[in-house]
Image (tube, rainbow, N blue to C red):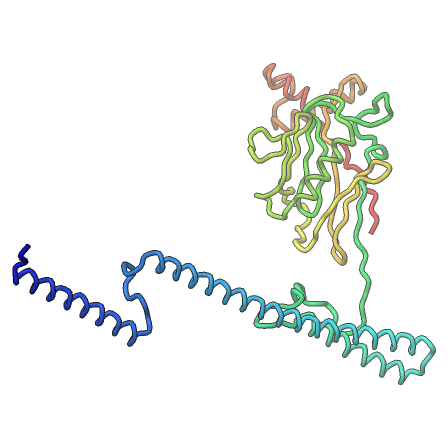
Length: 344
């Protein structure tokens, strides 16, 4: 079989060109030090290289984090060791001072104790790379020396039994009926509990007050509530309605520094506490529906007259229409303010 000279010449030329391209590619790899210049040169190898680079970056970050954690822990340990030394020195001074020293000696040790307290505060506020080691002191201490004054918490206690609120059930516990209210005025806020049924026990009322007080965040718009059907965020309760509102205009001004908390005592009374060094005003009232059968006729007439004058000034009860007369007859009667057993 005869092969044309033209075909042989073309094959030789193509082979020389391919070898030249490979030579140029190898020269580029030698000069750049990289086997691949473009992703399409070797897709699988390029993907593996990208994964390795990602792992390398992750390991580098882990190394930096570990180094920072080691520095942070070492710095914290050094400060804790210094605090231990300060504590040991404070114990030594306490033992030495307890043996009975003269006035100059006590003054010297007192000055050293003040310096130790200042150093403790500095250690507590120590930081590393702009990050506090121990969280710092959130509040500035009210003392700069060892003269620390212990405060007392103000306490107020409310007793339903002592004030004859509501009526006594067969089990000896006091209750209120449907529509009656107990209003607790604390630090410029009125905490209101209204019964939705008859025979609402004092225990349920105190639990509602305790919930309102303990979950009150200070802002009236964020105040907790119970059994308020118009408020979707209100805690459901079918037996009572409880909410917080502002006090009347002539009430004492609200002390925003007071943090109130409440609990039920062993005898079933409601105990309200304030924080140390702060005082607050407190009073309570019982709003009930009066029963004419419990009054003499003259007293009934007097109560009707007063309620009519309050609701319809200048108009007598007899001149009112039937609907308004029923409104007066079944109007709530605000009882005498409950006596608060105060313990400051």
